[in-house]
Image 1 (cartoon, protein in one colour):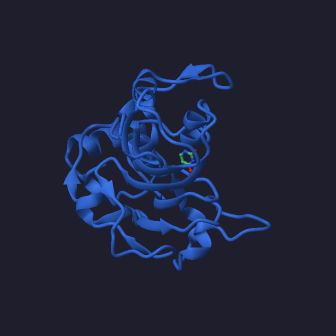
Image 2 (cartoon, rainbow, N blue to C red):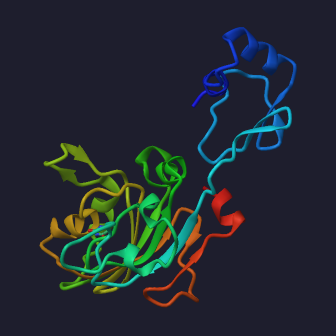
Amino acid sequence: MRLDRLLSNLPRFSRKDVRLALLAGRVKVDGLTVKDPLHEVREFSHVMLDDEVLQTGKPARYFMLHKPPGCVSATTDPQHPTVLDLLHEPDKHDLHIAGRLDFNTSGLMLITNDGQWSRRLTQPATKLPKVYYVETEQDIGEHYVQKFAEGFYFAFEDLTTQPALLAILDPRRARLSIVEGRYHQVKRMFGFYDNKVVRLHRESMGPLRLDPALMPGQYRPLTAEEIQQI
Ligand code: URA
């Protein structure tokens, strides 16, 4: 919400009072004086007018989870365990997943209550690479590399995938870097060659790598440094 809107919610404040209070430097957001009425105040921000707390700001929360295969990237599921079942945290309904993984895909999953942060991580425009380790049923041809770089046409979405970097590790294993997260994207890319993905594991999202100390099903909070990298 805009700072002037938040202040004008105070019944005793007219629009003019809001402007004057801001100009006088009486308003602090997260400890810093803010004079701009258009300043966007987030739900996580602490807002003060003189010595009065106007908004305490709820804590922003960020977790890294090692998703095991066989669990659903959703908050609830009638049949299967979900990634949220693996989190032992209060107010889990406030959290969401930044970039889902399929039921049998394992690896890095980021979970947060900060929508802006998760959008930066997942929207194709920011072009943050997501790196997957892939095992396939058939051999991976050298000619795949060029096609992955050129893009695949996905008729359902009517789009061509952004350039992807495929590194072949051995005939049936590869490491793939993509900047989007279309539905079943990796499986559909290999599906172009009728080559079934038999193992898929996300190693990293942008600068954030799955912590090797986390066993499947384990999680930890992100460090302040990791949060700031996004
Ligand atoms: N691509 C897929 O096909 N599945 C995933 O889980 C992630 C990317």
